[in-house]
Length: 197
Ligand SMILES: CC(C)(COP(=O)(O)OP(=O)(O)OC[C@H]1O[C@@H](n2cnc3c(N)ncnc32)[C@H](O)[C@@H]1OP(=O)(O)O)[C@@H](O)C(=O)NCCC(=O)NCCS
Image (tube, rainbow, N blue to C red; front, side, top):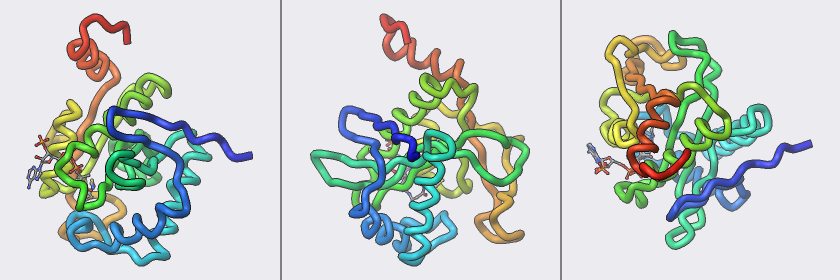
């Protein structure tokens, strides 16, 4: 039996289960050159649909995953944000990673950060994870800005060569950002001193 996919809400966003009508929009994003500047794309429609199928399988296996993101006052689908368990081995695995892909026409409005904050809250409060990581190539300034805004910290000693990127490929080197449950809870208390969470 399929596990129900938890739905998360923020001020402007809804992180929800995937729908068939999201697939062509996600495929257009996955084929876009700007979107893929720091990813191993572009993806064909078939590869994009297969990636969404893996996101959905991940929810069934783990109870969490990469949600479809809706911005009700803006668009029915703006991208994918969520938590995943990398299936490769690296010095920081096993772990849970927070990740994001927002359609370029919606960049720069704080949507990735807002959706990721909801995913982190789910990871720390509901899943009680001790730590969540994020990773990208050093040149991906937008993605790194999101990690910093989320309160994540990078240590140069954690930099690594991504095992799924071919050796000597320009995107092989990665930076790793970490956020512990303890530091996340401390930041929550500072943001709203009266709250018990
Ligand atoms: C990374 C990504 C998800 C960010 O989405 P977004 O909704 O625009 O993110 P936000 O608006 O929450 O934050 C973006 C931050 O980057 C900053 N930024 C924008 N352009 C920048 C640039 N050229 N250099 C540095 N920072 C930049 C913004 O100013 C903003 O930070 P601020 O709020 O402090 O000003 C989006 O660009 C994307 O989908 N990229 C392609 C896929 C990808 O690379 N995913 C990450 C793989 S690890």
